[in-house]
Amino acid sequence: MSENCLIGRQPIMDRNEHLYGYELLFRSTDVNAADIRDSGRSTANVIINTLASFGIMDLLAGRKGFINVDLDMLMDEVLELLPPEHIVIELLESIEPSPALVERCLLLKEAGFVLALDDHQYSPDFAELYAIVDIVKIDLLLTPLESLPEIIGFLRPYPCKLLAEKVESIELFRACHALGFDYFQGYYFARPDVLKKRKMDEHAATLLKLMRLLAEDANVEDLEQAFRGSPTLTYKLLMLVNSVAFGHRHKIQGLRHAIAMTGRVQIKRWVQLALFAADGDDAFDHPLVDLAATRAGFMEQLAFVHPHLRLEEESAERAFMTGILSLMESIYNIAIEDIIANLNLNEEIAAALIDRTGHYGNLLKVMEHIEVLDMWSAAEMLASIGISPDTVPGLQLRAFNWRKPGEGG
Image 1 (spheres, rainbow, N blue to C red):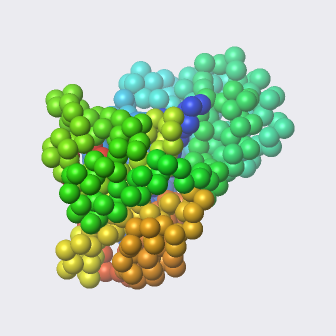
Image 2 (cartoon, helix red, strand yellow; image 1 turned 135 degrees about the horizontal axis):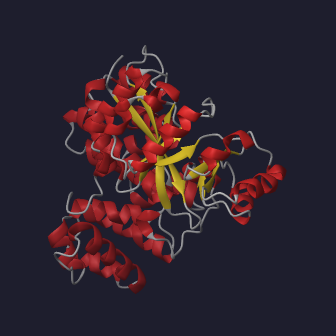
């Protein structure tokens, strides 16, 4: 089995719709390989090796990583090589309660791991485990909504928190939120097309103008002029630059200082991402911003190794912008053709955004496969493009990690 893996991250949100963690899905980039989630020691070793090569902090950005394990892997000592402060061990629904299972879970808890029951359906047979595990995940596709109050009533006497899994719509999210669920997971948070679209307000229009000015290498005076009509936006972006670029080491006093210290490329990217953060959002703690950042960052990295795009000086930046703009139409009530016209985009980016054609369109399709955890299709498309699987883990790490404070620009 190949040890080169694509990693899918599905966001897990708290009650405030802030990122709590990610469920991690591992899939070999060898399209002929068996499912990497098959049971057995080899699966455990591949997952451990993958996490080791990625770097757990860079992969998770300080949040929890949920990993599915079957009984064989749960009992394997290799599991204890994972950093317990960052990992949530999910016991697959195929695992049956037993004294040996209870004993193993107690040992893992003592080692500092967070434990969860995956795709769980309530049963009194699990009473001992309910007292041990930290999270019970309830699959909404398997559990009718009308039966949830009774199930919650059974589980509430235990110290475990409840996670609603496969939240596919805003209606389901609101219903589970009202029932008191602590965490939420599902394509509602990963698919922007189900979100309520926003009007292109003054802040967004200013950001589009700034994107165009930055793309045209406008001078600092023109950039400052674009900000003058929106003091709130100016403050928000300066705060972002302060927090992201240098932490507490350097406080940026104004836009000119920010551009000089941070660099136009990084400023440009933060302007692009700010389009996804509505007023009142905690900016980059929002799942949609996280999705946009990862999509754009991975497309940029893929452009560096693309057989054709790597020969063009501007291709990485164009790939990044394609990734960002590909989500714009889902967020705002504005046609993608209008966005393209406002930004005066070149024909290759426009073709990718409108009908997913060309080199950038193919990279965009790779990302869309990964985001719905269709890793097989993504791996097949990467192979057809001519991108070696050996390069993928490092590229994906940089895509996850490009917003790390102190880097970039």
